[in-house]
Length: 461
Image (cartoon, rainbow, N blue to C red; front, side, top):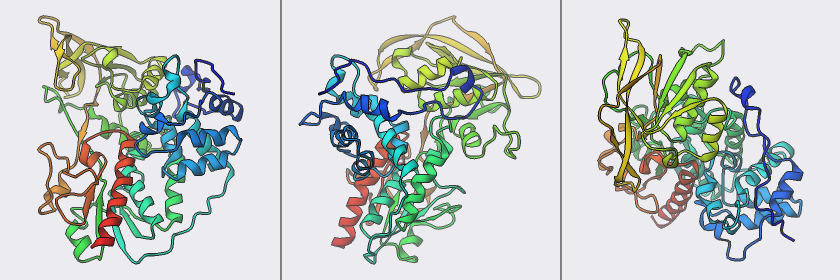
């Protein structure tokens, strides 16, 4: 019989005062008892509305039923049929806007904690079961995957299951893409990402790091000289955006990409790190998405007083509610209806303050959100010695500029159809390289779709 409690079972968190000084994981996950209790809230709907909200179509009621039966490994295997990265998705996917938004329990209360249950079974598997995956029988065909982020890892994993000889080419010295350089340790431990990557290696996927496609090799060279019959471009969107306001070239101004890469990938917060990064006293983070929350919480852990400046209200914040709540608990302040108009420096070209302007909301803009407009005469200064711009990213133009005939959007995204096919035969693309910055699970869905299309392309060629 279902547990009709209107609220999710709470998940244990580190104390806010303690966690604001450490990069240890904040959310500690469900115990077995808590997972069984939360699973009992699932009604096992026959039409499974939650599945329609999952970009990789996990059979959610099926895996939750296996939890109810205490078959935790079976639940993991059920998820793994559809997802290559269960432990990652259980931690960072915006379930509240996807699968959980379709849950009927959410009509009169809180939806079932699908993400928390996914994390529970993934962690159970990783802690109790030896990974004995083996390569599938080879089919004699080679595919190249550019980028080892969520779309690239998913595409490679799906193709390897079909017997393809897959090589991932990664520009950085560590595989994982945005999962390792963009998402902080306190949200997604790097050992969790590495565990998922190790599983792909056991399946026969090869990963070649320190390889920049467009410089080390071109796509033409991969296909015409190295024997790859198809290429998947999952290179993400790593080119940061700025506001183009005075003072953005001052010392102490970072893009969120640079700041988070130094923190997450290069461990700049450690005393023994060889990667320089300032430990600011007062930090302004501009933006309201998940990346802004990650940057703000990292700066807080460096000892800074942090203010997030956002030009709309809290109701319009695009970041996950959970991440905003965690940031507020950790002492991060928010200046809503506020927009920077200049960054001010001293005689050493170092940041000393940010001049802001108050905003008010008007009619909706093209995005459907209320349009912020400045309030005349409302300028004021906020003291700061560091400013982090978290305004979104676009794809790096390197692949476009070195691949003749590859059609792209004006803003830089690769043009691809619903199956990931681009304007070049045998070249497919997905994830942020096509859509611009989006979510991990949407990128995974694109990688999965493209893998199926690549298989059909090669078999029909």
